[in-house]
Each structure stands twice: as C-alpha cells, then as structure tokens.
Image (cartoon, rainbow, N blue to C red):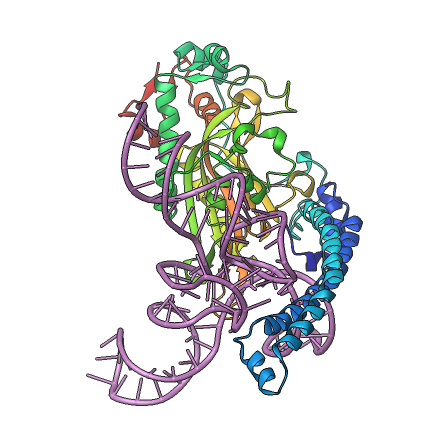
Length: 442
RNA sequence: GGAGAGGUGGCUGAGUGGCUGAAAGCAACGGUUUGCUAAACCGUCGUACCGGGUCAAACCGGUACCGGGGGUUCGAAUCCCCCCCUCUCCGCCA
C-alpha cells in the first residue's frame, strides 16, 4: 500500500509504475472512489456534528442535577417547561439520524471498494531499476567465482543423490505427491549443516535469531503483500482462515505489526529458519526435475525494519545482499548478482536483486536468493510504525528482506560442483564442522 | 474442549449512560536548579481521516476511535448480541 495523498499528487508516477511493472490497477476508478469517499465523509461528519450538538443540549434538559438546569430554575423557568423544550429538541433528531444512516450505508460500500483498490496499487520502483518485461531483461551486476571445468562427464544432483541414497524422490512423491522428496542420511545432515552455517553467519552479523510460526493469520499475508494476488501460490487452511507461509519473511516482517516502535529501537535485524510451503500453481511442467522447484523447503531468511529513509534502507539492502554472498563465498560456490527489472519485481518492491548460483546440470545460473526493499509498502499494510524522536510524528518503517540460504535448492550446486570423477561428493570445508568432520560422501 | 475472570492511550491503571478523548502513575519531550552520573521541581504530551491554512510546517475547525463487528438510545468506554484474544482452573496431549 502506498499513501493515497501520493497517489493523488503524483498520479503520473503511479501510472508509470503500473505500466512498467505490468500490473492491473484501475487508478482512475480509485481516484473517483476517493473523491466519493471524501465527499460522503464530509456530509456524514456534518450531520453527526449536528446530532451531537442536539444531544448535548438534550443532556442538559434531561439532567435536573446539572448546573445548567439549576441555573434555568433560578431564572424562574419551571421543570415542566424545560422538559417540554427538551422533548421538542429531541423530535428534531429523527431526520438527522435517518440521514446519517443512509450516508453510512453508502459510505460502507465506498470504503470497501476504496480499500480493495488501494491494495492493488504498486510501489513506485527506484530510478535505478531497469525497465523490462520479464526476467530475461534483468541486469547482471557482478559475478563471483568461476564455474568449475570438469575433466569428466559430470552427473546431476538427482543421479548423484539417488546413487548415494541421500535423495529419495520416489518415496517423497509416494508420501506427498509430485514435487516432494526425502533427504536421507548424509543428505539430511548436509541440508542441516548448510542451514546451520547460514544461521550462524547471520547471527554473527547482528541479526536476532527468531523461531516463528509458519501457519499465520491471513492478515499477515495481506500485510506483507502476498495477498491479494498470491492466494493460488499458498496453502491456505480454510477451516481456520490461516495460511502456511511461503517464507519466514511473512512472520518476521509482520512481527511488529500494529505496534508503535521508538526510533531508538531501529534498525531491527531479524533472522529465522523456517519451512516454506509453495503450491507452485501455474508452474505445471516447469522445472520438474529434481530439487529445484518443490512444494516445501527450508530457508534462513533475514529481515530488516529500519527508519523511513531511502538512503538508509538502500544501505541495508546492500548489507543483506553482502550477508548472503558471504555464505555463498564460504561454500565457495560461483554466483552472480542480478538487478531485477520492473516487470519481474512484483507489486510492492522499490528495488530487488536476485542472486543466482551456478548449477552445472542446468548449465546456467539458477536463482537461489532474492533481496527486496519495500520502502513503506509493507509497513503501511501492517501498520508498523515508529515515533520519530525529532518531529514526534508517527511514521511507517521501511522493510527489507533477503534469503540467507534456501535448501535443498542450494544442494543442487553443492552436490554438483563438489562431485568427483569416482562419483563421490566432497563436503565443502565450511560444512565439515557441522557434519562431524565428514569429508566426503561415497 | 468445559468453567470462570479480563481486554481502556507508548506502558501500568481508574472509570458502569450526558459535565469523559478519557483520572493517576511511569516513560517521552521542553525548561529551572544542584559541580559530573543521577535526582528534584515546573510545563508539554493520543491516533487516524476530512476540511481550512502554509512553499512546507506551526496552527484552526469537524468526525471517528476505550480488542473487532453489529444493536439499543436524543446520547455508549459504560447496556445487549456475535466474534477474536489473554489469564486462571479442569480435561486431553508432543
């Protein structure tokens, strides 16, 4: 959500954002409804004001103990007079009440439509963001490391994992259907070792580790911007009006929703490991091989809540990207950082970068991380504010998030890059401490 | 799941139909004073929306808000109904 005043005053900028982000949003309708809303509020407020005035008068007439009533008696008026006069005033309230009722009914419809439309308005992308239609127009910012050149025919992670009994796709599918899997033995250990490395790294860098709910109220899904629009992607529990999160970002970002923080508390840096649930609706037939696109995975996510200052949130954006890179560098995996273009970045984001890690079997870089800054888009929806010390004003925070590591997707490059000619897999140096010193699988 | 008690401003907490947007305390902010840390005293201090005002503020007016939503009433924090949440006890249980 963005400020309605900004929409009114900078309509062209919003229109441009709608166009380059390729979003459906009827801004003209919104502005019309906004006008209706304001007009009807003015009318209703006026009537309510009249009614209030009359009511307080009646209050005086009806309360013989009041000072006003006593004064009137002292002036020689009788209690009967006053009673009759009070009733006369009371008779006037009927029409006003009817008017208010009518206006309120109309207002209700208007506000409902207004709120629904407001949820569709996109955040305005930063000037740095390249304009483009889809991920093919994302721009490479930098590369780190070199893809390994094999002097033998490398196998893919499914072949390797199955051979070693560390990935069991067949039984995963038996248990839960397509896009499910089991990690077994050293595979499961490797998965946990990577998560632990990521968690330790991010904690060392000043982020508070948090354990969060993964089944949350719909409110939090709306608040973080996943709803409306993302309902198809989420597992929703209709009986309870709750949804399984697709990322711990939801829980971490919404954590302080409806609260008023003090400026001194900021920035708040949080990190959580959680299982992430994704229906992958609309992705039928896409990336069906192996552990790339699956219905559940574990991810360490980092979130920052900071002051409403673009240069500050921009600085933190680079910080959370650097945090993710540190983990990839520790794992010695080659990757590149992509700046995501307008058409691929999503409704709420000001700026977005993906990190793609080299995956030998795909013969390309595959997305493993996604770092977004939202400005106050999420904070407005979540009613997440802080009191500015100087101005004493309540302002919406800025929010940002990035993956630290997501596994098992990251196991694809790990297993494939670290395979040996004999089919064994070397455990990356950084993970051995988390695996009881094991140096290789197979 | 059953029974009971509650939900009031940044926090604690009074308030059971009009004089209550809401006592008091804490915190915060401004000031005075004691040589520093700190304390004492005086003062200020809710939020959102709408309108006016301004380059922008200060500011002025209106309305709404005492967990959420309905209702009764001329008038609701206060009475009624539904829902949510917290606490205590009982039951069940990783």
